[in-house]
Structure formats: C-alpha cells, structure tokens
Length: 415
Ligand SMILES: NC(=O)c1ccc[n+]([C@@H]2O[C@H](COP(=O)([O-])OP(=O)(O)OC[C@H]3O[C@@H](n4cnc5c(N)ncnc54)[C@H](O)[C@@H]3O)[C@@H](O)[C@H]2O)c1
Image 1: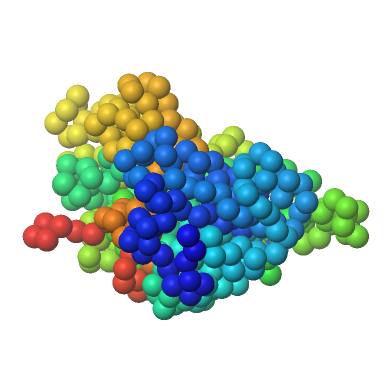
Image 2: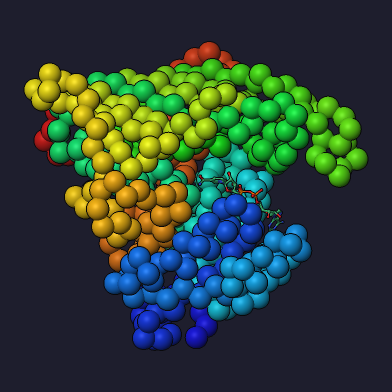
C-alpha cells in the first residue's frame, strides 16, 4: 500500500494497508543514532504488541558504503541508497528517522515534511533556533507528526518525578540544579570532527548536551522564561580528521566545550517562581554520562542521574528526618513493566528509544500520545540561542514560550 507523496497517511490508511497496520520506515544516516532508531522500531511489536503496528524497514540512506551494508545486512532494510532524497520520495515510506549530523537537519527535515513524511528527528534539530523554527513551520504546514530524540525524558524514574511535581508531592518548587557532564571529548588528540565546527554543528556542548538538559528541565518543571549564561572553550585546537589533507595539522575548535546558565521559569510553569542553574561539559574527566538533575521543593526533593537510570532518590520533610531514600524503578513507575518484571533488574539506554518510538507512532496514528514534538525542539533551541546571546552580552535574555510544547505546566488553581 502506498501513500501519496504529499499527504501523511491517516490511521484509516494504515488500517487499510494490512490488518497489522504496517508502518513503512525510512532512515537517513546509519550512525550511532540511526542504528538505535532502527533497533527501537524492530523492538516495538515485542514491547508494545497492543500498539498493533508492524514496522517495516523500507529504505536507509547513507553516503558511506559500509554504513549502507550494515543497514541492509544487519539491520534488515529492504534497500539502501547514498541519496536521502530517494528515501523521501519512496511511496512505501510513512515515517522518516533523521539521524544525520546537525548541518543536514534543516535541509532533510523540511524536505521530509514537504514529502508528507512523519519525522522522528535527532536533537539539537538544526544548528540553532532559526533552523528549528524552519523545520517546525514545514511540519505544521504539512500536518505531519514529529518526535525529537530527547531520550532523557523517557526513564521511568524521570516520568515518576514529573508526576510527583505535578501532584504537589514536593510542595512549591524552589530550586533546580542540573548538570550534563561527559568526558567523551576530553582527549585533546581526538580529531576535529563535525561536532567542533560551527558550520557543521552550530554550537558545541550547548546544542549537544545542554539542549537535552533544557528539555529535561522543561519536561519536569515547565517553560524557562529567561536565562543568563557563560560559555568557555578549553581545548582550543584539535588534529585534522584522519585521512584528510589536514590530518597532520592542528586546527581551531570553533565552539564551546563548557556552558552554564542561571534560569527563571515562566508563570505557567509547574515550578513557577523557582530559580535554577544548569551546567554542561563534554570535556569533564571523571563523569562519563553524568546527566543529572536535582529538584528542591518546600516539602521534599529528588535527585536523578542517568548513570543510575533505574533509581531515584526522594526526600520528604517528614519522612526519615528529611533524608534521601533510594527508590528502584518498579511496576508502579510508568513503562517499567513493559521491559522488566521486577525492581532491581535494570532497563537500558536502548529501552528509552523504544519508549520514544512508541510515543512517536502513537502521534503518527493520531492516538493520545506523550511524545515530544517539534515545538519542544524549538523551545529548547530558543533557550540555547538566548544562552549564546547572554554569553556575548552578559545580560539576562528572555525566551518566549513556544505554543504546542509539552513542558510541565502548573495545574489550574495550584500556588
Ligand atoms: N539523542 C541522543 O542522546 C543523541 C546521541 C548522539 C547523537 N545524537 C544526535 O544524532 C545525530 C547523529 O549523531 P550520531 O552520533 O549518530 O552521528 P554519527 O557520526 O555516528 O553518524 C552520522 C552518520 O551520518 C552519515 N551522513 C553524513 N552525511 C550524510 C548525508 N549527506 N546523508 C545521509 N547520511 C549522512 C554518516 O555517514 C554517518 O553514518 C546528531 O544530530 C547528534 O546530535 C543524539
């Protein structure tokens, strides 16, 4: 069954396609994320059989021969191409995962939406808010569904924490402290890959890690209204890429490897009135993927760190003298029992992408969905752009709330 090149398939069209609602998947870029998206689609029918969807890996694009071989012979795509445009023109493709380097996000995202394909696109969704906004406009015009690779929203412990805040279990939120610290770029001999070049990546650690942290903050606490930030570049040059004419030279790093910001929340936020600080580094020695957030309220607090994704520490003023208690994710946490039968048996990173895929497919089908979307991507990108402006000027910069975002907003009638 084929879809028109310009019209997204509707639920009825899926139903007509086969009894099991086959979903034609296209992939652009078969790198780390492209492989992960593909495994997530493949796992969907096992983890969420009630979704009634059978993903079919139709076509993958990558200019690198070995990546295309992997897509076809390991991941199981029916065909491959070096040119992503073929994937977008393929009438058997309903949804497209865009896992390309940042400089291609806008070009591919806009073209995919215009071709009527629903898009699951990796963060930071372009090289800055202007590109994210252009993809958003194209997606809105075409009426296609969207999901963003904001996977740190998905751990059951994080979803538990969001509900805790919304239900008022921590009282009035007063303060948040977030840090996304990794060391994967801490070796100065690591070459000048696309992530360190403005033209190809846009910002550095701001887009790469801070974008995740800003989204996590939006998801847990609500829209950020204004920021002031500082940024720094401490590894200022790196060797050229192996095999390139510059391999023997040292070339300048063009974006920041550390960023921090102070934040204030919008009045609509679940954490309205709270203050916070967010830090990100990709050159920190010690932390590997210490992506953590601590939230403090008048009645209690929690802290969570991705390196221990299956647990959360919660403290309540009147319990155990207000000290932290460690909770392991269990069946009472959203999604956990889809993956494991009992607490202590951990979920992993891949599982977060399966949850993300499920929510994306629900929004494609027009079902109720808690998927992130292109409005969330713009909300995060706007904060990062404001942070860059603030780092230049030394001033606070406002960030208008983006309509359609899914951040945690205050319940009607709460303080
Ligand atoms: N959600 C997350 O936690 C997370 C983690 C890592 C990366 N990312 C994001 O995912 C995206 C990809 O990152 P990655 O780590 O998978 O990169 P990667 O370097 O592993 O893979 C990039 C792939 O893109 C391919 N490519 C290059 N030019 C292309 C073109 N013209 N058409 C199609 N493919 C092309 C390359 O050959 C390579 O296979 C980035 O935007 C990155 O920020 C997100």
